[in-house]
Image (cartoon, rainbow, N blue to C red; front, side, top):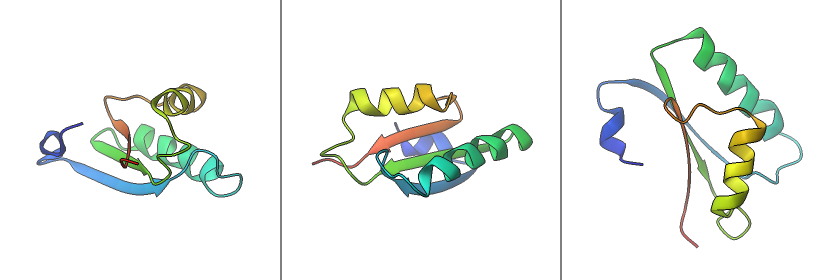
Length: 79
């Protein structure tokens, strides 16, 4: 992911961790709804749990929520 790819675009940013049982199972679908409603909107979601959110786990998360990586980037901090 290169942040300059968002230059000149409207985007939202959030932090999350994929093992969250409460908030993020609600927030992520809401982000997807916003992206469908606003075609020019892009999103970046930053995992703040690199120990548990491996690249494999984040790939599963993207599949689970049918995330379009052209408009919704899922990234993580380094451990």
